[in-house]
Image (cartoon, rainbow, N blue to C red; front, side):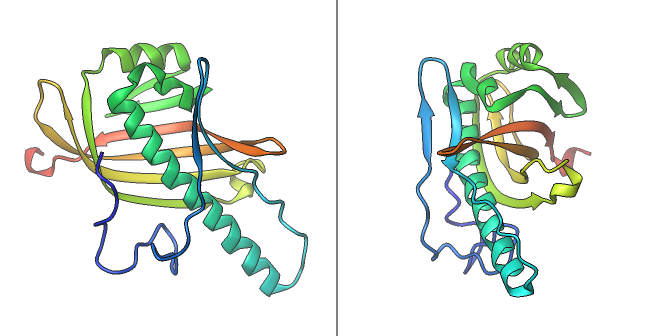
Length: 195
């Protein structure tokens, strides 16, 4: 899978201004055991209740930084799993997650497992990543991040296609870490020349 080092000239932006690749990167881990493969990040910090506009701005920036770093780690894990360990991909989804693949709807882990099993082997190349935290009012106070990717994919026996993919990730926190799962996934080929 292609790294994001050539996204743009100059600073890299992950859905917000001012975030540069020159900022220190917090280490996140990919946990693999016999039963789980998950995107784990440090526990999300609770937002301090403050009416100060400056404090609210700092809290929001911290929230955005956490969300975008989790999204970057998620994208690395997701596409590596798609290409090299497809049998484990459903561990990244919630039990009632929905996938829309080029207009076809797949819901639930059993249906997702069957769908991914039928896909030919793949080789994804990611050219762009963007992410935004979703406001808690829109998600019933569930910590949620919108992740948007685009790039190219070649499925075995088929020509290369450009694609874009949108994920809604939700956070499930414990005192020591946060596990991110896919609630919704929308994948679409973007081959404009053939339309």
